[in-house]
Structure formats: structure tokens, C-alpha cells
Length: 324
Length: 262
Ligand SMILES: Cc1cc2nc3c(=O)[nH]c(=O)nc-3n(C[C@H](O)[C@H](O)[C@H](O)COP(=O)(O)OP(=O)(O)OC[C@H]3O[C@@H](n4cnc5c(N)ncnc54)[C@H](O)[C@@H]3O)c2cc1C
Ligand SMILES: Nc1ncnc2c1ncn2[C@@H]1O[C@H](COP(=O)(O)O)[C@@H](O)[C@H]1O
Image 1: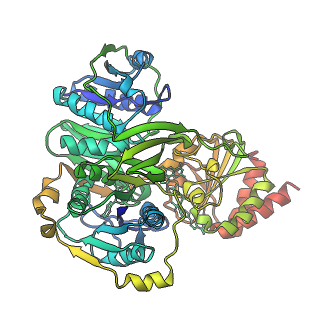
Image 2 (image 1 turned 90 degrees about the vertical axis):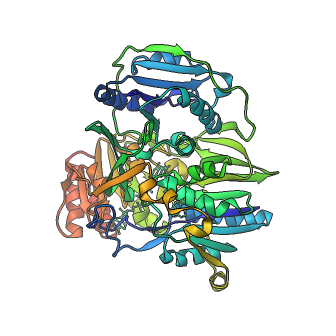
Image 3 (image 1 turned 180 degrees about the horizontal axis):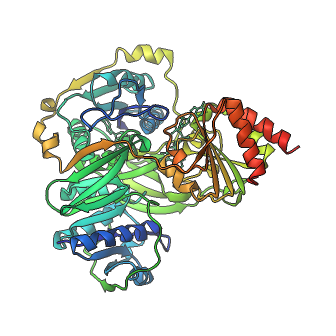
């Protein structure tokens, strides 16, 4: 009753990091609840994933079934409903990912599970779980609690924890899939790979990144001048690619690219977690934003809190002068 | 194709100072400017484009107080046919499953093929209402959709995954899709549309009208509880560059060059 289950996420033959991040958190919690961690894996031909997961979880339960070849929320939901009617976990964790947000809310409704999404931290205090999440693009933290009976369900935010080295040697057990037949109302058809553009920003040494604060496409000229003065490539937040100022392959963040340049200059970007996840590995980060509370400043090494339209042209001019 | 599109009115807090109010469960929103949630704006556009291509209707659905009417009228001006707003102070907005229950009650008895929501609300960011709504309605769904192709009672939905990859799933209608930003180019409301929108039907309903009891969707019956809001401490190691804007720019340029950053 005090066990913590983590739904394993994998895609196209790869285990996804979020799984290992969640198992780290689960293991810390299980020490307090006095239960075990259980990695629950649904897939087809996933023996090697199961084996690898023993390094991170007390137990690995897996259903190996051709019906689980590709993720399908409807099949997952059916299997999990059947499974959780028998097994009674204390807590179930899923990634707050394209998979988790597509599955968890429906499962929570069907099983009437107390459910909190996009949890950034989870404490166990006075025999109770305290999920923490954020509102208003990270400007406000919100403490929640669960009412009602376990199992509790959370989706956990990606890239909040380090991906660990193996720290356990757990047991593997193959279990029968409760899924008896295929379904026809939702079918997986295919993957479409990311667009490839003219510049591969994952290889860039210096990146100038633009966000909604740049306001209009015509202001990109000012950004291009800065970039050319320091031989940088230009990338963007999602708001800027959605607006069409730059192609989608220049987007940095969870749904775009992960970049690790030597220098990242964020201009008019608020620093939503989906963006930070893609750029916080940069060696040096400069942020220019007029909002002193913008979350981007938490990651910055140098901060200019001011109007970018006053700062950027002068910055370009001075850089041109200094570099001759 | 008869489509419902769910829209929420949210504050723009990207440049605003956010303060927690005395209840510790809300923020002081007196200085915010409000508008339609970003993703919902794309959902409205998608619904209207589907109607333009295939015929049918677009009904706009919102759960919230009267302040939302202007936003709803704008969605009507862009091509919505009629609207429903569920206004009831008893609804608990801190639980996405309860919001989904209210929206489902409004849709359930109607004729529809498709329900579109945004994939996330900019204020609470639950990313849960749309998928929970599908479960309440007992119909299939696809979350985080950035391309829609409707044909023969089915829809091919391109779901956005991490890292720029997407997956294509085929689902049977009726279905719920949660729409991701960037899927289309939302139009501006034409002047003529704005005038016409004033005459379109906007029904305001209470919980009782939907046949759901307060108990089902109030804080007391929620399985979760919002305990408190607080402003997180931002631990910044950043060196803040001071001065007039031009001075700041010059100082930064010097640091970049002398510090060997470029
Ligand atoms: C599933 C999902 C995936 C996502 N994936 C990504 C992703 O991969 N990458 C990504 O970037 N986002 C992603 N997002 C979106 C993300 O949540 C934010 O909405 C987005 O990053 C905001 O972009 P922004 O910072 O440019 O805009 P905003 O948040 O609107 O910020 C604009 C900033 O500009 C500043 N500003 C305005 N005017 C000026 C001025 N004159 N001078 C100086 N500063 C100014 C403001 O203070 C503000 O901080 C995703 C969202 C979802 C739901
Ligand atoms: N009060 C509401 N009224 C209408 N639609 C809503 C409401 N709250 C959420 N939604 C819809 O659900 C989507 C996801 O919201 P959320 O789960 O809160 O992130 C939004 O983009 C809206 O389309």
C-alpha cells in the first residue's frame, strides 16, 4: 500500500530520461513511506529496457505485448485500469510529457484518482504527500494536498532532476498484459521526424535567442545586426517561432532543440520552463528583459533589466567598435 | 462538422508583477490585462477553418464570469456561430477535473463531431482539462495537436512530441483534440464580423441548468486541495548590470569582449 509506481516512458527504442528522473524522486519518497519503487513498463520487445531499469528501481514489472509496440493512450489506459484494480499503489508517477498529458487526466477521471499535474517537487511530510506546482508561467508556486484515498496520481515535470547513474539492483518480473485485443478508435500511424533547416543550432558556439518581447518581425533586423557583429546564429522561443519570425527548427526548448553553446543571449524571453530546459546547459547566459521577475534571470550569468529596444542597438554598436 | 471550442480568459502576466492576495489562494489581478488564452485562440482558428472547408457549425464554450463575454464575442466575430458561458461562483477552478466535468455537462446532450480545447491554459498550466473532458464524454482524444486532417468520420491528428518529432494518430469522431500553439495563423476579427457577433446567441447557464449539483464541482468534493500560493524565491547568481540603458549596453559589450565570451 505504500509502494510508488513510475510509468516508464520510452519511444523508438529509447528509454526516456524522465523515467530515471522520476525513479530518483520515487526512491527518495519510498524511503519515507516505507514502500518499494516499482517501474511499470508497457512495450513490445523491451527486455533490455527492463534489465536497465533494475539499476533504478526495487522492482520492474513489464508487460511485453505486440499491442504495445507504439504508445497509444487508449490501450495504456485500458491496461492500467485493469492493473490498478489489482495492485494498490500509494502513488503513481507519470511524466508531464507529451505522453503523460495525453494519458493521465483520462486515467484519473476513470479511476477517480486524486490528481495533480506538472508537479515540480513532491515532499512527504507528516504522513502526507505535498505536491508543488506552478502558476502564471512560473511566477507563483502552489502547494497542493491530496484528499481521498490512494492511489494518488501526478505528472512530474521533466528536467527538474539530474539523470542519475544506476543506484539500485532491483528484480524484474514479466506480467501478463490484460489487453486482449486491439482497438480501432485510436490508431498510431507514424512518426514524423523533426524538420532540418539551414543552420543546426545545436552546433552553434554563440546563440542570440529572441522571444515575444521583440514584438514584431521587422525588429528582427536589429537582432540580425547584433548576431552578425559577434558571428552568432539566431534561435528563438516558441512564441517567436509560432509567430513565424523564424522557422521551427530554430526553436529552443522541450518541443524544440536542446542547445549547449558557449554563449546564449536571451532577448525578450521570459524563461518558461519549457524554454529553460533547452538552454540551461549553455556555458554563459546573458538575459535582456525589462521584467525583473522574469524567470530567465534565475539561469542568467549577466542580467540587463531594461527595454531591449534601447539596449540592443547600443550593444551592437559598442561590440562593433570594440572588435574593430 | 459541428465543433465545440473551449476558450478561457486569462491574464497576461508575462510582463506584470504578480502578487499573492490575502486569501493566499489567488493573486491580485486588478492590474492585469486579460485576453483569450493563447492556445485557445489557435483552437478557435482551427475550428473556423474546418467549418470553412467542410461546412457545419462552431460553438464557443466558456466557463467563467461575465468578464469573459468580450473574449467570447471576439471568437464569434472570427466565425463562431453561437456561444455558451457557464457562470457559477461555486465551480472550483483549482481542479481541472472539475472544470472538465462542467464543460462536459454543457456538451453532452448536444450534437457534435469534434471538441477542440487548447492544450494548456497560460494561467494554471494544468494541461489536463481537454483530456479529462474527453473521458467525461466517453469519446477518444489526442493531446497536443499541431495538425488536423478530417476525413470520413475520422481525424488524423499530428501530436507534438518532444524534440520536434511528431506522431500521427487516427481517431474516430466524435473526439476531443487539445490544440497546440503554432498550428495555424489566427486571424484578426473583421469589422463586419465584430458587428455581426453582437447579434449571435450567447447563452449564460448555471450549474442547475446543466443538471449538475454544486457538490460535484465545488472545492469540498474535489480530491485535491490548493493549500497556498507563494512567490518563489528566485536564486539568481546573475551579475546585474546597472546604469542607464546605453551604459548597460556598453558595460555588457566590454564584459563580453574582455571576458572572452565572444
Ligand atoms: C507543451 C509545450 C511545449 C512548449 N515547448 C516550448 C519550447 O520548446 N520552447 C519554448 O521557448 N517554449 C515552449 N513552450 C511555450 C512556453 O511555455 C512559453 O509560452 C514560451 O516560451 C514563451 O515565449 P517568450 O518567452 O518568447 O514569450 P513571453 O513569455 O510572452 O515573454 C516575453 C518576455 O519579453 C519581455 N519583454 C517584452 N517587451 C520587452 C522589451 N521592450 N524589452 C525587454 N523585454 C521585453 C517580457 O518582460 C517577457 O518576459 C511550450 C509550451 C507547451 C505547453
Ligand atoms: N474555464 C474554462 N472555460 C473554457 N475552457 C477551459 C476552461 N479552463 C480550461 N479550458 C480549456 O482547457 C484547456 C486546457 O486548460 P488547462 O488544463 O487548465 O491547462 C484550455 O486551453 C481551454 O481550452
